[in-house]
Amino acid sequence: MNRRIAAFSALAMTAALCVHVQAPGQTTDAEASAALDAAIAGDHRSDRNRARDRYRHPKETLQFFGFRPDMTVVEIWPGAGWYTEILAPALREQGKLYVAQYGEEPPFDYQQREMQTLEEKLSGAPEVYGDVTLTALDFSEGSGIAPSGSADLVVTFRNVHNWFDEGYGPPDAPAIAFAAMYDALKPGGVLGVVDHRWPDPASEDPAAGNGYVSEERVIDLAEEAGFELAGRSDVNRNPFDTHDHPAGVWTLPPDLALRDRDRDKYLEIGESDRFTLKFVKPAD
Image 1 (cartoon, rainbow, N blue to C red):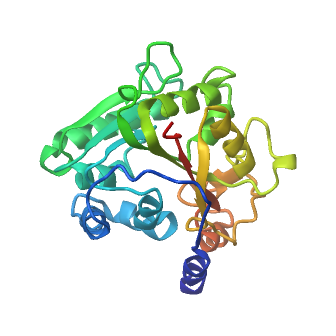
Image 2 (cartoon, rainbow, N blue to C red):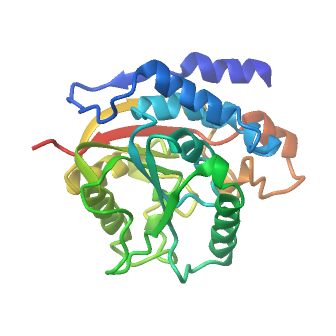
């Protein structure tokens, strides 16, 4: 396993495109790095969540998105709060965090459980998380993820593929979501997207039923909403993911949907191959 993890690190590279991105935060790179280090190393994080850092690369991912501890940040569909455990403490003193949950009547029981877990986590340790504002992205007309034009950074991790499944929302759910994220951002603000990568857009499932989506499809959605692609990173790429698993992406850890069947094989592969994209809302 160590050789494979080393291979991930060796492949972690950033390919920035020639698009100007306004830096909303005023803190230095060193201050941003220290804030992330402190949040990632905090005692509030469980051993199980820490074990996923080697696959999710939270510091490198957030640095690629331009995170600063004095930003206003929106996290879309945070689930039980894996990234919230890092974002909220890092923003507690100087910044602001909105977490846009599933809404008052989420379609799936697991979503209700995740919302409850996250709310209990935040309310149980205000000295760690600070003042986090709970909002919603439920595709209804009245839902709002943050005040219009207020955010420096919007992030969403492994969520876009869900929006193509009609069980999660209306047929135009992806367009609604990207429009909401665009509206929440200030001009010059950044949208960061991580999701399970399908390598060939010509053969991907339109409903993303296997949990994978192509970069090209996500880029098209973002550009249709008005965003410009500002960069892409291989920090979350996994070259050992063959993308053809019996139970889709959920075959891999942490879900291990097949339970003990070929368990060692999927643990050796690790978590899914993921793209990491950065978009900017044009300043003009």
